[in-house]
Length: 304
Image (cartoon, rainbow, N blue to C red; front, top):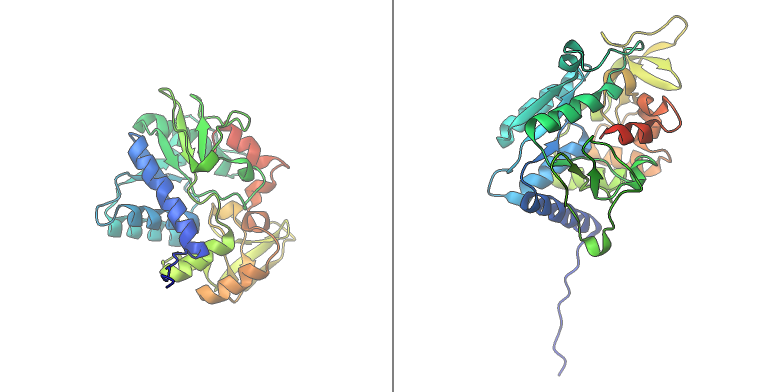
């Protein structure tokens, strides 16, 4: 007589979720003062959701931090504040305007503050003594991020050296570091943009409204549609229009382009994402176009 055997298989999304929760719990167990970077963007929203799952029914045992440039979308800031209040998580705001006022960084001639975040981030890490910093970067986003380990070692200056990283065989993570050094941790390393949207739909996770189709007054620059705002105004000769758009990624208003889209639901965004052939950063982030190696240069200096 044959004894029937039962099989236990995880779906693709369950496997990704399990891996990410394992990484988050490893950090909580191994480090003294972790922090989770939370901007209100879709990747950080998923990280916060996974952290809540990882420790449920207890509260998330570490704070979240937002490096605020002062050039954020108001819808995203409202969502950020409401979300941390609902979860009862402590929010640390590291302010780029404060760094400018104190002379730590100088305002750029072009007014873009995204590259200035590095100094503010490193100052906040040092001030609060954080030894592990969760980030929402994924390897499919950009070539410099594709080089990242899950546990990314940063030296006493917060800098990243891609040749000075540790092997992660069999999903074993080495978090050893000296005082003043820290580890950046990327639980979503193996996720893709499509995985992210499918998981958001599966879990019915709320997002800022700008991720879905809405009407906005925009202008055309460098083949991208930028929002007209107090921080960004069209130059002479640039096309101005009111279009139905959405945002694939959320960053500073002056460097984040919108895409023309009528996708107003999770299913519609998933269908649109599955058909695209360009990553969200490649399609919509002006800060990645400052130079051919813009992201890698910033990462070496201590950027996310």
